[in-house]
Image (cartoon, rainbow, N blue to C red):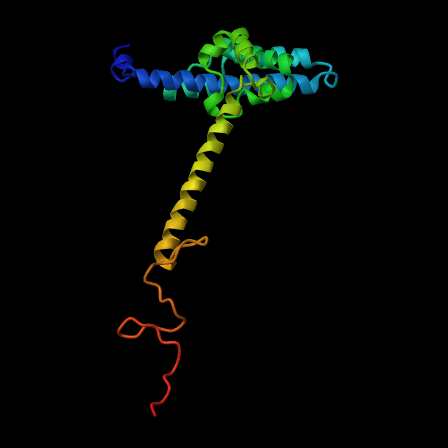
Length: 205
């Protein structure tokens, strides 16, 4: 017992937070698979209920994968978390269909958190209560798209302004701008005294 505690340092706060996040993501994966597989097998597999129950019991008893995760990183996959994730995706699908269900974790930054799994009904209400009801994220996806469009438009304007300045410095003004004041008024080159010559001079008498 002493050896077990001696070579098992206490994880830091950041490590604990990472383990919670990893457990949540794995639960979301398995929960989504449960919901989608159950939906796809309805009316096609007569023993789908028995198969689902066998999978749940197997998860409750654990397996080699759970043991490896526990020994390597100290991660414990709790069956309750998997049920919470499955309930969350089922509730989202009931509220808005498969598109809303899949949009909930379209990107890791907007995926449900551990707190969302603790309050499934609250998460569904929040995700469906914003102005962007169709995206299933409470308008968050629309806000992200608008911000990206604004950033790209600003970058395009800045690039165009820099190109204008560079062209002005190298080739003179563009877009019909004024020419420099010291531009020769005649068509030919300037003489040494500053007067423009329009052609060869006539021979003297």
